[in-house]
Amino acid sequence: MSKRHVYDLDLPEWEQWVQEQGQPRYRARQIWEGLYRHLWDRPEAFHPLPKALRAALAEAFTFRRLTPEQEQVSSDGETHKTLFRLPDGPVVETVRMRYLKRRTLCISTQSGCAMGCVFCATGQLGLLRNLTAGEIVEQVIYYARWLRAQGDRVTNIVVMGMGEPFHNYAATMEALDRLNHPRGFNLGARRITISTVGLVPKIRQFAREGRQYNLAVSLHAADDALRQQLIPVARRWPLAELMDTVQDYIRQTHRRVTFEWALIRDVNDTPEQAHKLKRLLRGMLAHVNLIPLNPTPGYEGRASTQRRAEAFCAILREAGIPCTIRLRRGIDIQAGCGQLAGQALGQRPRFLVGKSLRAAGATEERTA
Ligand code: SAH
Ligand code: SF4
Image 1 (tube, rainbow, N blue to C red):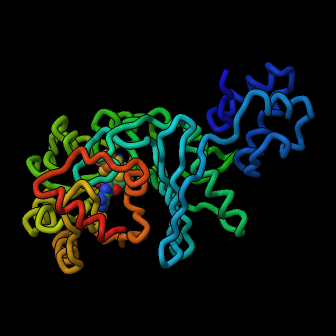
Image 2 (spheres, protein in one colour):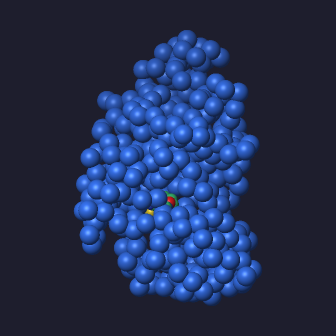
Image 3 (cartoon, helix red, strand yellow):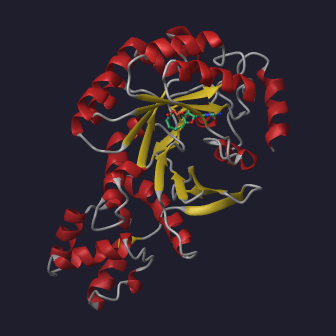
């Protein structure tokens, strides 16, 4: 029988396990604190436990399902990216960013992604598989250990790596709840942001369940025709329905929602799109995050210029809608979503469009 992963159990499950071993319940708390507070990485480290329980831990559990296979550091040293191999073969990426006092991790919830957004390297891979809750947690623990060795710690988590978190909803929530747990890793809910491509039923579920994590919605277009071109899954839920759902979420939670927008030159960075977006967001508790496109091998679109990005932002700001232009940090290490994994897997270009074969060659040269 294969061993269970230590990060796959929640506290009540640990309590059950220690009791099955004939041990009192408080031993579960000691294990929990060892895993999430002390970040111990092997059974022998759990010195508060009796020897027999340590042996049982070693017998029944594995501490590691992620093997770091490639590490890259950006030229400014502030962005660090790891490609992990999972035991059954697929790969997954995690990115650490340092900005002022923030130590933000960008974590993945799936290897690949089924949503097929044309401009996204992960979408171009297709879905390989969902990650388990433990595999999602372990990405954070890996970097938390790494930061601790330098006297530092994780301050923020963004669920914006590979995959669509709401397409692996249960495992994502389990993982975040474990990281948020006050007796363990204890990262505040407001320091955690989940980004979704806009799966309407799951946004409704998220609102209903009342978790306090921040929500970001990837919009990228302010009319259905363009949005459906860029995001195939958008055909399932027209913009009007998506925006109603987000409005309901805001009404229920009183939380501000971030809308993400990858600025693609001459595609969605036009004043026309900015004006449509302004009308879409009027009166809403929203914030717009503009990200100049990171070029990917399977898509010929280019990034907007800084001038176009600023003009787009200005239209929104004039209407009182807060807007920021995010730096493409770590572009020299392909910290864009799924780009390193694409290379490692020899990228199956599933969504090549137009003159893309030539463009793909050119893009690879530019980003290599
Ligand atoms: N699946 C989720 C979260 C992961 S993607 C989502 O789509 O929201 C995180 C963000 O990166 C999304 O806003 C996504 O649209 C954006 N993104 C993906 N590929 C990109 C690229 N090549 N350039 C810029 N942003 C990109
Ligand atoms: Fe999946 Fe998000 Fe990439 Fe779209 S942008 S393919 S939803 S990871």
